[in-house]
Length: 122
Figure 1 (cartoon, rainbow, N blue to C red):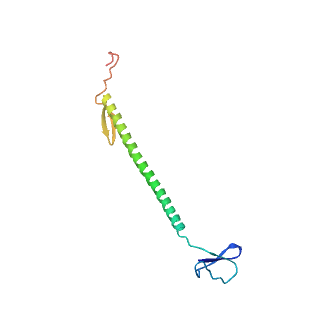
Figure 2: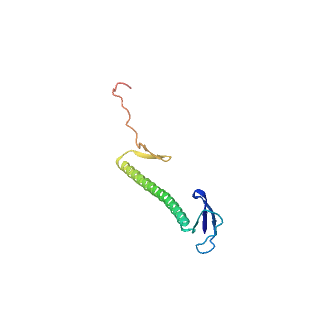
Figure 3: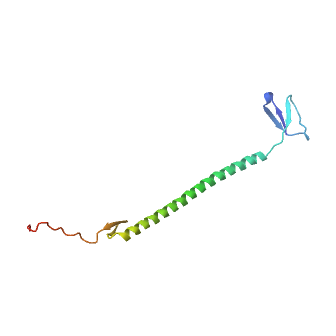
């Protein structure tokens, strides 16, 4: 294809060649031949696609890592809570009672009855 440059180097008209390496000219100025390159457009599009894949993949990986980390943390916390409950049940003589979803201590026996220090009072 032929290109005609205007004043100050601004590109003007683009026309098809009349023969191999020949251009038909109807005005004064600089002329040149150009070849369209489609590889650059494809490279830019593929680079944009790769960037999109990398960004979305990174977001997906971070989400999965945080989800798995949350599950591990929750499992460890439950295990620790069960261990503490086992220790308290083995060493304490006070019984427990379920109230709603909570397990609360409850005494199984009565306290000793108070006794007066002086026998003279009825």
